[in-house]
Image 1 (cartoon, rainbow, N blue to C red):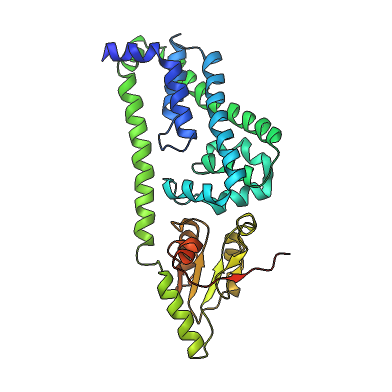
Image 2 (image 1 turned 90 degrees about the vertical axis):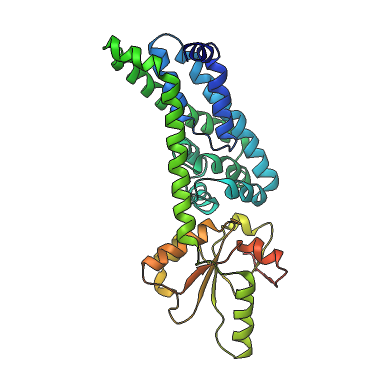
Length: 318
């Protein structure tokens, strides 16, 4: 273990840079434990924060810039990929778009502290056409605040631990194991949260074929169609201004605030951008907690409906 620890100390800067770059690129490997460890190592003068901080910022900026340009070029398709593989099921495209829509580039100042938002914010900033120079300025400041907070928190812990030589010696000896344990613990926590979300979602989903049959039955029997809600953000509607037959465009927050307008006497179907329907499922669960029980997310969202070859209606853009 001591030789392995020594090897890590020699390559500490490279490990820190690579780890942060991977996380910001979308790989679910939490970098907070590694930054805390780097801060603690600086207390033993095995690493200098004056080098570590710029490295973390540069690694983040490289990954964020790549996501920015991908979001600017490909828009919703990039977010669909991120949303599909994100471990933060409850923080998806709609939430980030809403935050960026309200606060613009200011979102980047705190985005790194919010799981899910951290990775989603750069491509959505690109999709929203925030100027790149402005993106770089705010993202750099946000990265400095984020990295500085965790690195200096680790340094503070290291300085406190140094007051006891025995405790600091134990900490140094088991440093690698402690970091790995923290990384595993954070990853397991995220996986458990996602599993619980999927358990809650199971049985709620409505298949595109089932919804199409409901629409056809309603038309044949001259009944009202299911109340279909398009939860997509306006940015997602622009590239393909089409919706499900009879769908109403209402944002997630607005729908929850105005839940009195939702009919209780027929089925409510929600769909969003995410192919794994995180946003619509989350909103459906919240509406159920408000007593609206006949609400279900559409499996696959809009993309699932399109893949099944079912009809769409043009949306009149204002």
